[in-house]
Amino acid sequence: MRASGGSLWWWVGGAVLSAVGAVMIARQAIDEQRALFETDARIVHRLLSQQVVQHDAILDTLALLQPAPEAAGNAAPEQRLPSLYPHILSVQRRDRDGTWADPALGDAERRSAQDRRPALAAPDLPSGRYRLVLAAQPTAYALTIDLRGMVPWTEWPMKPDTSPVRVVLEHQGQRFELQRGDTAALAGTSGWHFEFHKHLAAASQPFDVVAEQRLGWSQLPWWRMLVWSVAVAAVLALLAQWQRQRTARRRAEELLRLGQVARLNTLGELAAGMAHELNQPLTAVLANTQAAQRLLAEDPPELDTARGAMTQAVAQARRAAEVVGRLRQTIERPEARSATRTLDLAEAARRALHLLEPECRRRGVTAQLQADAVVPVEADPVAVDQIAHNLLMNALQALEGVDAQRRTLSLSVLRANGGGELSVMDSGPGIAPDALPRLFEPFFTTREGGLGLGLSLCETLAQGMGGSLAAANQPGGGAVFTLRLPLKDTA
Amino acid sequence: MTSLSPTVHLIDDDAAVRDSLALLIGTVGLRVTTWADPQAFLQGFDREAIGAIVLDVRMPGISGLTVLDTLVA
Picture 1: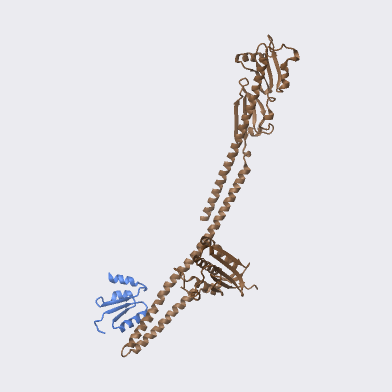
Picture 2: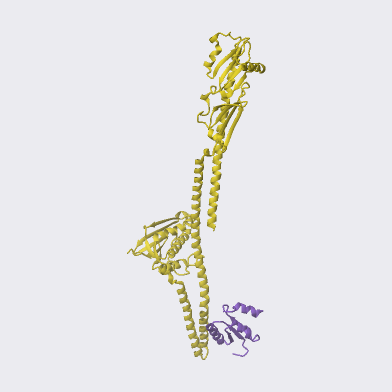
């Protein structure tokens, strides 16, 4: 239940993380697009403003050249303007006392005189051109200007053919499109709409520059978002994997510890039961022999009663021996042998070392394993694990007695003398010579608080599998424990 | 062995222990009464004649400590 709840949280956390990240990536992309759009629109506005202001200046210059030379056919200097400025399609003039060919120009001249600035003459934007009139005496001038031609395309910030931005000039409901933009996207309603709306900076030509762009869903940076989600998933998968491994290792350690505790508990119970079972016959033996002693000391000695007491003492001593015998039978599990199977001793050593790796790190012990590729032995895997674990723990505890730099622990697994041998060598203080012969006795311990059962149990387990356990001091210092197990017949 | 000697009540469910202890206590000149069942002892013993009791703790049915508590009460 905990596992499934945990994985649910991994999924929810991953989904939230990738969604939040994707939204942030999308928002950043949209903001970038918006900033780009606004910069371009502002440049467009500035370029067009500069352009129309120039028209005012041209008309002002023409007016300043008064009095204008009388009409002299093609010699009129203002007629050279279109060749100078290609977007000025033509220049018209009203000479002194003359009239405009088009009454709209006259109307515009009147307004121009009133406002003291050039005026538009009946503008018709969709036609792509407009006329600008400046009232002056004696001669007034009118320019016909090509809208598309006046755009300085060389300085234009966008590619006119491919840019998704639509640019339009507007005046009194009339429109002229300077740049088409992405018509399909602009016709849609989904996505994000950017708009820019501003008067040209010239009172005489009060056109509005309108720029629009629509960013569709398909233009979001889906690839970047996908990469982000995959990255999140990958990182989370790695984390989950790492946590799973850590949990598994912790669980294994816990199980091992529990196993040892359970073993000790069983042992304690066994000992308490044994004490009671033995106490009774021992009390009877004691009482009978003491009574016999007294009866024999009497004068005359009561031989018959004393003999009876001694017979009782013998019977009770036998009873005590039976209790012990029964106990041995219980402890030496007859099923232990049946649990043996073929296992790789090198693998078992690796597993034990792996299990205690955090412990080694914590104690600053460098551990190394030197093993033949595969050493198949006939043994009970649980017992081998238990022995290897105990030997390693013993070695680690022995290393507490030496400097941190000198703490080394080495394992070797090899085939020798017809058996598989696992040796655990430490750089500790070694085994005291007087302790060496008693090392595997039950309840013999050199450690304060130790029960003295670890090595005894290991030896019993090893012997139960037809193997042996030996202890010795290394010539260079430190102890070596060697577990020998029967090799699996290769036949 | 005078009749004035106090009685030692010996209560143990284990016959071997009971008999051997009774023999031993008898050799030093004390009167011994043995009981296999603590319940029978509580019902049948002579309160006036009591000298000492030797009581096993672990017994089936009723523990030695319970017997002691009942005696004190």
